[in-house]
Image (cartoon, rainbow, N blue to C red; front, side):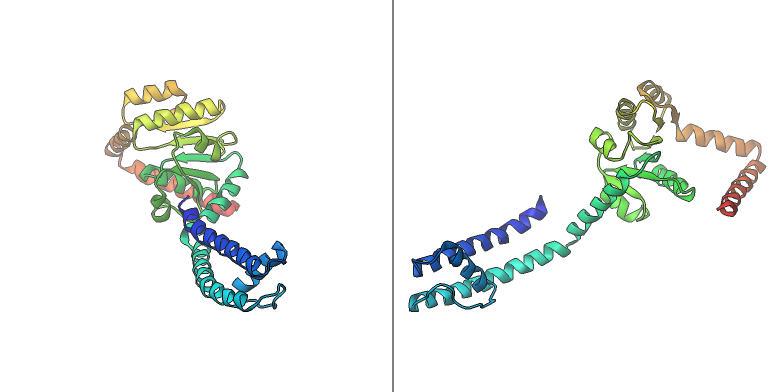
Length: 262
């Protein structure tokens, strides 16, 4: 809407200028057709100069001089404004968003990640390393510019909004992970996603057991608590320090297998 506010004023000025020129040429050439007067106004404003197709006396020529003096200023201002509009970062972002929406519409059996915090970025990197298609949803556009990979498909919006989830292709998605900052938002996303897709695999993050129970009742297939999971992992490392090396070796072997197979 802000972009159109920049375009509308010069557009109205051009229309007013052409209207003034048409009426002026008609006034100084009463027998001329309106379309010829409009044609004269356009050719005069654009300084094309195809000649006079309507008869102009001395008064008409004086009108043309004044009309040109006003018209050149209006045309220059309008051309400058339209140029800024066409090459502005806002219009470029709009074009990129349109292309991204087109790519998202072509996805199927993909993954949706709600929230681009630390957990969200880790999930997306994990999916990207394995070549899995995914879409990220977050309210903050700056996060996509500063934190995310430019090639990651994303939607700037509220993940608790049904329309945003539908834009992400929730009806065609394979799984959804919601890692928004608050438990209330995660519960709402789980509930909305489950109502929109009964077959979707939903994984949610919870900060405590009470929130986890609510998310399961709302329709989450799995609920993860980073604090309890991290604590259990730390306890395992304390009891068996060598398990970390074992897990790293297993992960490297899986990566090597994928690279060799590709």
